[in-house]
Length: 229
Image 1: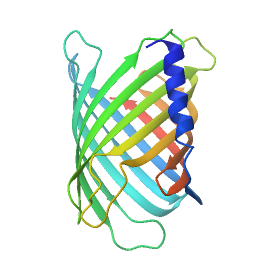
Image 2: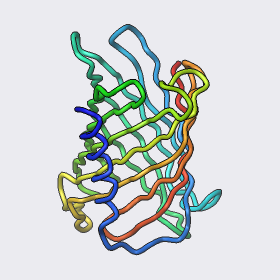
Image 3: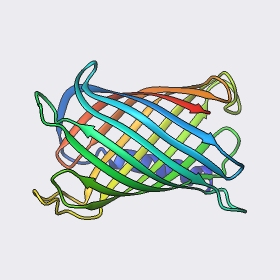
Protein backbone atom coordinates (compact mmCIF):
# COMPACT_ATOMS: atom_id res chain seq x y z
CA UNK A 1 0.00 0.00 0.00
CA UNK A 2 1.54 3.34 -0.99
CA UNK A 3 1.25 6.43 1.17
CA UNK A 4 -1.37 8.19 -0.93
CA UNK A 5 -3.75 5.22 -0.75
CA UNK A 6 -3.22 4.70 3.00
CA UNK A 7 -3.66 8.39 3.72
CA UNK A 8 -6.88 8.52 1.68
CA UNK A 9 -8.26 5.36 3.29
CA UNK A 10 -7.59 6.71 6.78
CA UNK A 11 -9.41 9.98 6.20
CA UNK A 12 -12.32 8.41 4.31
CA UNK A 13 -12.99 6.28 7.38
CA UNK A 14 -12.45 9.27 9.67
CA UNK A 15 -14.78 11.57 7.74
CA UNK A 16 -17.35 8.88 7.03
CA UNK A 17 -17.74 8.20 10.74
CA UNK A 18 -19.00 11.75 11.22
CA UNK A 19 -21.72 11.57 8.58
CA UNK A 20 -24.47 10.06 10.76
CA UNK A 21 -27.07 11.70 13.02
CA UNK A 22 -26.45 11.08 16.72
CA UNK A 23 -27.47 12.64 20.01
CA UNK A 24 -24.42 14.50 21.30
CA UNK A 25 -23.45 13.83 24.92
CA UNK A 26 -21.80 16.89 26.42
CA UNK A 27 -19.74 15.14 29.12
CA UNK A 28 -16.15 14.32 28.14
CA UNK A 29 -14.79 11.04 29.44
CA UNK A 30 -11.26 10.03 30.43
CA UNK A 31 -9.74 6.75 29.30
CA UNK A 32 -6.41 5.76 30.91
CA UNK A 33 -4.52 2.92 29.24
CA UNK A 34 -1.40 0.89 30.03
CA UNK A 35 -0.40 -1.21 27.00
CA UNK A 36 2.43 -3.73 27.31
CA UNK A 37 4.37 -6.24 25.26
CA UNK A 38 6.97 -8.73 26.44
CA UNK A 39 9.01 -10.53 23.76
CA UNK A 40 9.79 -14.14 24.71
CA UNK A 41 11.71 -15.18 21.59
CA UNK A 42 12.21 -13.72 18.15
CA UNK A 43 8.68 -14.85 17.17
CA UNK A 44 6.73 -15.26 20.42
CA UNK A 45 5.56 -12.55 22.81
CA UNK A 46 2.97 -11.74 25.45
CA UNK A 47 0.88 -8.60 24.91
CA UNK A 48 -2.08 -6.91 26.55
CA UNK A 49 -3.40 -3.87 28.35
CA UNK A 50 -5.18 -2.52 31.41
CA UNK A 51 -7.71 0.31 31.04
CA UNK A 52 -9.76 2.45 33.41
CA UNK A 53 -12.54 4.54 31.85
CA UNK A 54 -14.86 7.20 33.22
CA UNK A 55 -17.83 8.89 31.53
CA UNK A 56 -16.66 12.26 32.88
CA UNK A 57 -13.15 13.44 33.69
CA UNK A 58 -12.48 12.13 37.19
CA UNK A 59 -16.07 10.95 37.83
CA UNK A 60 -18.77 8.40 36.89
CA UNK A 61 -16.98 5.06 36.50
CA UNK A 62 -17.56 3.48 33.10
CA UNK A 63 -15.36 0.42 32.68
CA UNK A 64 -12.29 -1.51 33.81
CA UNK A 65 -10.58 -3.75 31.27
CA UNK A 66 -7.85 -6.38 31.63
CA UNK A 67 -6.59 -8.02 28.45
CA UNK A 68 -3.80 -10.52 27.74
CA UNK A 69 -2.73 -12.37 24.60
CA UNK A 70 -0.07 -14.60 23.14
CA UNK A 71 1.55 -13.15 20.02
CA UNK A 72 3.26 -15.11 17.24
CA UNK A 73 4.99 -14.00 14.03
CA UNK A 74 5.03 -16.79 11.41
CA UNK A 75 8.29 -17.44 9.58
CA UNK A 76 8.96 -15.28 6.51
CA UNK A 77 6.11 -12.86 7.30
CA UNK A 78 5.72 -9.39 8.84
CA UNK A 79 2.35 -10.30 10.38
CA UNK A 80 1.77 -10.69 14.11
CA UNK A 81 -1.03 -13.06 15.15
CA UNK A 82 -2.59 -12.60 18.61
CA UNK A 83 -4.83 -14.97 20.56
CA UNK A 84 -6.15 -13.57 23.82
CA UNK A 85 -8.65 -13.27 26.64
CA UNK A 86 -10.34 -10.09 27.94
CA UNK A 87 -12.24 -9.28 31.15
CA UNK A 88 -14.59 -6.28 31.36
CA UNK A 89 -16.61 -4.84 34.21
CA UNK A 90 -18.57 -1.61 33.99
CA UNK A 91 -21.62 0.48 34.71
CA UNK A 92 -24.11 2.40 32.53
CA UNK A 93 -23.88 6.16 32.08
CA UNK A 94 -25.14 8.28 34.99
CA UNK A 95 -26.18 7.18 38.48
CA UNK A 96 -26.05 3.38 38.53
CA UNK A 97 -25.36 0.58 40.97
CA UNK A 98 -25.60 -2.51 38.76
CA UNK A 99 -22.31 -3.75 37.34
CA UNK A 100 -22.11 -5.50 34.00
CA UNK A 101 -19.46 -8.13 33.31
CA UNK A 102 -18.16 -9.52 30.05
CA UNK A 103 -15.64 -12.18 29.08
CA UNK A 104 -14.16 -12.16 25.60
CA UNK A 105 -11.83 -14.11 23.40
CA UNK A 106 -10.07 -12.19 20.64
CA UNK A 107 -7.89 -12.93 17.62
CA UNK A 108 -5.80 -10.20 15.99
CA UNK A 109 -3.81 -9.71 12.82
CA UNK A 110 -1.29 -6.84 12.99
CA UNK A 111 0.66 -5.68 9.94
CA UNK A 112 2.33 -2.56 8.55
CA UNK A 113 2.17 -0.81 5.18
CA UNK A 114 5.50 -0.01 3.58
CA UNK A 115 5.77 3.77 3.38
CA UNK A 116 8.70 6.13 3.41
CA UNK A 117 10.66 6.39 6.65
CA UNK A 118 8.68 9.39 7.92
CA UNK A 119 5.29 7.68 8.20
CA UNK A 120 4.28 4.72 10.34
CA UNK A 121 1.07 3.13 9.05
CA UNK A 122 -0.19 0.05 10.90
CA UNK A 123 -3.33 -2.05 10.66
CA UNK A 124 -5.15 -4.27 13.13
CA UNK A 125 -7.98 -6.67 12.30
CA UNK A 126 -9.69 -8.08 15.40
CA UNK A 127 -12.37 -10.76 15.82
CA UNK A 128 -14.09 -11.00 19.20
CA UNK A 129 -16.24 -13.69 20.79
CA UNK A 130 -18.32 -11.96 23.47
CA UNK A 131 -19.87 -13.56 26.56
CA UNK A 132 -21.92 -10.81 28.23
CA UNK A 133 -23.78 -11.43 31.48
CA UNK A 134 -27.51 -11.79 30.80
CA UNK A 135 -27.16 -11.66 26.99
CA UNK A 136 -26.75 -14.03 24.07
CA UNK A 137 -23.31 -14.97 22.81
CA UNK A 138 -22.30 -12.89 19.84
CA UNK A 139 -19.29 -11.91 17.75
CA UNK A 140 -17.85 -8.58 16.64
CA UNK A 141 -15.37 -7.50 13.97
CA UNK A 142 -13.01 -4.53 14.31
CA UNK A 143 -10.59 -2.78 11.96
CA UNK A 144 -8.12 -0.14 13.13
CA UNK A 145 -5.82 2.04 11.05
CA UNK A 146 -2.95 3.78 12.91
CA UNK A 147 -0.85 6.62 11.49
CA UNK A 148 2.13 8.13 13.37
CA UNK A 149 4.14 11.03 11.94
CA UNK A 150 7.32 12.41 13.59
CA UNK A 151 7.23 16.20 14.00
CA UNK A 152 10.89 17.18 14.34
CA UNK A 153 12.81 14.18 13.02
CA UNK A 154 12.72 12.05 9.90
CA UNK A 155 11.87 8.91 11.89
CA UNK A 156 10.39 8.04 15.28
CA UNK A 157 13.30 7.21 17.56
CA UNK A 158 14.27 8.08 21.15
CA UNK A 159 13.06 11.50 22.35
CA UNK A 160 10.77 12.04 19.36
CA UNK A 161 7.51 13.97 19.42
CA UNK A 162 4.99 12.69 16.88
CA UNK A 163 1.41 13.18 15.70
CA UNK A 164 -0.80 10.15 16.42
CA UNK A 165 -3.97 9.42 14.44
CA UNK A 166 -6.12 6.33 14.43
CA UNK A 167 -9.61 5.22 13.48
CA UNK A 168 -11.40 2.04 14.57
CA UNK A 169 -14.60 0.64 13.07
CA UNK A 170 -16.76 -1.95 14.93
CA UNK A 171 -19.25 -4.28 13.18
CA UNK A 172 -21.53 -6.71 15.06
CA UNK A 173 -21.72 -10.27 13.80
CA UNK A 174 -25.22 -10.79 15.25
CA UNK A 175 -27.99 -8.36 16.14
CA UNK A 176 -30.06 -10.37 18.66
CA UNK A 177 -28.70 -9.82 22.19
CA UNK A 178 -31.34 -11.88 23.98
CA UNK A 179 -32.71 -8.73 25.62
CA UNK A 180 -33.22 -6.71 22.43
CA UNK A 181 -31.55 -6.00 19.12
CA UNK A 182 -28.55 -3.94 18.02
CA UNK A 183 -27.48 -2.65 14.61
CA UNK A 184 -24.72 -4.30 12.59
CA UNK A 185 -22.81 -1.00 12.83
CA UNK A 186 -21.72 -0.96 16.47
CA UNK A 187 -19.52 2.14 16.78
CA UNK A 188 -16.60 4.12 15.40
CA UNK A 189 -13.68 5.67 17.27
CA UNK A 190 -11.68 8.51 15.68
CA UNK A 191 -8.58 9.75 17.56
CA UNK A 192 -6.09 12.60 17.08
CA UNK A 193 -3.31 13.46 19.51
CA UNK A 194 0.39 13.70 20.25
CA UNK A 195 2.86 11.03 21.23
CA UNK A 196 6.36 11.01 22.66
CA UNK A 197 8.83 8.16 22.19
CA UNK A 198 10.95 8.34 25.35
CA UNK A 199 13.21 5.37 24.63
CA UNK A 200 13.02 1.82 23.32
CA UNK A 201 10.88 0.77 26.27
CA UNK A 202 8.41 3.62 26.74
CA UNK A 203 6.25 5.89 24.67
CA UNK A 204 3.31 8.07 25.71
CA UNK A 205 0.23 9.35 23.87
CA UNK A 206 -2.53 11.80 24.76
CA UNK A 207 -5.35 13.12 22.65
CA UNK A 208 -9.05 13.38 21.93
CA UNK A 209 -11.24 10.58 20.63
CA UNK A 210 -14.78 10.91 19.25
CA UNK A 211 -16.98 7.87 19.73
CA UNK A 212 -20.00 7.45 17.46
CA UNK A 213 -22.70 4.81 17.91
CA UNK A 214 -25.97 4.49 15.99
CA UNK A 215 -27.62 6.78 18.56
CA UNK A 216 -24.94 8.84 20.34
CA UNK A 217 -21.82 10.93 19.82
CA UNK A 218 -19.43 11.43 22.76
CA UNK A 219 -15.91 12.72 23.32
CA UNK A 220 -13.16 11.09 25.39
CA UNK A 221 -9.69 12.17 26.44
CA UNK A 222 -7.37 9.19 25.96
CA UNK A 223 -4.04 8.89 27.79
CA UNK A 224 -1.87 5.89 26.95
CA UNK A 225 1.43 4.46 28.17
CA UNK A 226 3.13 1.90 25.91
CA UNK A 227 5.66 -0.35 27.64
CA UNK A 228 8.03 -2.77 25.89
CA UNK A 229 9.04 -5.03 28.78
